[in-house]
Length: 246
Image 1 (tube, rainbow, N blue to C red):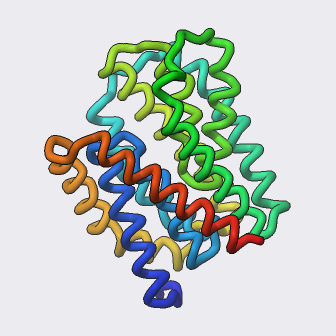
Image 2 (image 1 turned 90 degrees about the vertical axis):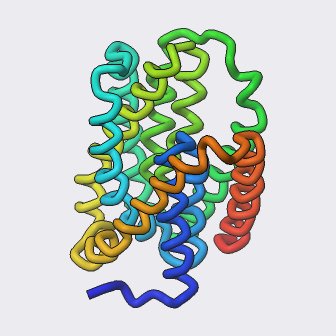
Image 3 (image 1 turned 45 degrees about the horizontal axis):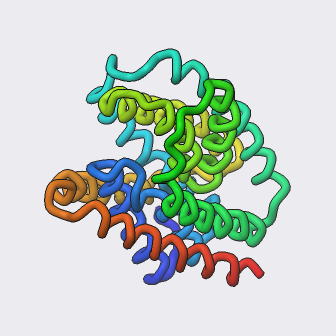
């Protein structure tokens, strides 16, 4: 049995799933951060997040296998306590906030993502390991609410100046860890259930096509142009979510 969504809702869900796959396949976060906010224009924001989490976990299995052994273990250990605390805070927020409040938060997260994308070239000075905890908390909260943990993670990892392969592997492991941490509270909150699981299963081919498309596009699409599209899309969706919430 599948959720009784409108044609518009299914269209947004399919588009969001595809973009998540593209992001995982070749653009390290890119359009993936827009997926839940885009879905939240048509369905409940946490319902949207619940649909995507099983797909993300499947994608993480392949990503972890590809990058295993190349991550910086110390950096990952520094991040994990913050990730745990951030997921706990996110769980508490969802338990007390109404859907429109979550949409408002998502709109704010979307606009913060836009700000991050605009200023990240200057946010590259070396920083101390102390900031792993705040970064981990930020990743846990934003990932729990919207699977959008890339900005706070990159604000910490990029200035740490890891080798490229180590940076990508560490980010992959961190996202895999936070997705596993999110699974029990999502089940407890009822955001993942039998109906949502069936919907996630039928979306697996869409996610796979997105991953393959991301791998194909990464060497053909200008990265600067791509991220300009990301910024524009996130700004539009963020404003729309805030308007819808108000």
